[in-house]
Length: 596
Image 1 (cartoon, rainbow, N blue to C red):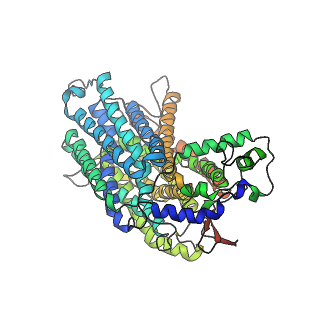
Image 2: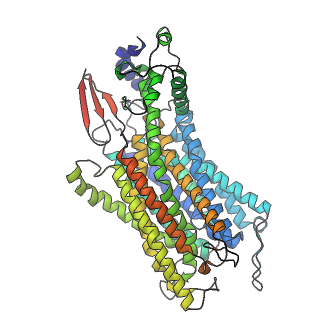
Image 3: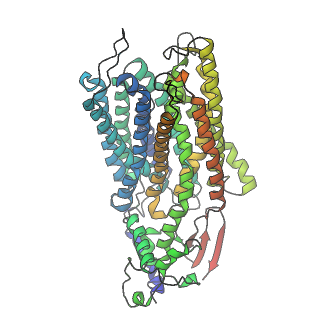
């Protein structure tokens, strides 16, 4: 039968494959590669955040776009930047590999940054300054906007190759089958996010200060230089990296399973799953860390692995007619991840408001920390980054060792629990934001400033600190947990693709924010000109209602997530050791051993 084809020679061929691999036998990977990868991430995030955080100010003050149009442009750009990782992941997993995908994408990003910097420096590429006497501002024309959008598109395409690959490439430097390194992988995610947060902190302070006080030419030029150093640092570490070979298009394999299952839709589902087709030789290139074993869910897909007489008569099976159990389970794993993926969308929608409406709130408040120094409005997100960094250190050094005593898990708590904590804290952040907005408007009314949107309201900007800090704490739990979840539960050969799903959730969250802002702006407009989200005078709006609407949506989303987490099936992996035992493991830390 085809089910047993070539299994006896699998161990020898896998050993031969490892011996012939250019990366095996050399001391590559490990902690020594982290300085180069983290240096790349720090410089890259300095560039990305350096112009992204304060872009709302650039669009309104330099390009003279209306607030809602500028906010939607920013969220659309964020959404596109988070969608292109699917393309980058496909290229990396299919044929290019992660190293070269990151390198080429970084160069594309560099070109976009240079173009954006030129648009800020050259007067003909932006509209003239506003007429201060009558406050008339000419909006950027179509040509100027075209250059802006092309620059943003290049940076979005560059991000598409960088984002899904850097984190996976970093995790690849640790061998999960090595007992000494298996706990290092989940720690990598914490410290990867810490380095990313530290660079964002610098961008939100130093770079934003340069943009607001020196000029946008320097403010965008410094991130461009940082991107150059990012590329240099990453390429310099080339000889040290552990580089896994791409194993062919994962999307093709997924389609093959679907086609095979459809063609055999009239075939009865087998009651004994051990009769399903398995071929370890065929799967060895995509299952170096272990084979996925059969699960009982979505059994209609099992038909793709049912061996029929037509299949049995062929010396070489047609993958469009017959798939292995491992490949069927790859598709099942991705489908099972879908509901958990969708739950992360609204958290991104909530946090997206920090760079739009929360920033506009900050601009209207007293930002003086001393008599001579005031914090730039865009730098308010520094509180998000500080709270996130502090929480990561607390989580890694105190929370995990304490939780480990009760759960027995190396990582303290599962990534599903970690994500759930993040959802609750994010809900509290938007709930509190509504009350803070009421306090801001009361101060404006007391000072007679309700109809003076450019006036500074006599209320400290530090009133916004709680909502920014809560968003940072939520991110340290939910976003890192989400990233761990995708890397951990994705099929081994699809980890760039899985990491792209993390960024795709950010894309969906950004587009959801755009949709929500557009709908609320449209349907809350009244004949007297009032609106929850007015274009020119936030003091006359109802921003608190918008925050509480997001809070309600997050509450419903939390209930949905808890149901998804309760019924989620963790990915089981079967590892064959040298003694011939099969060790079946799940990511909960349990291990089952079957002797064969």
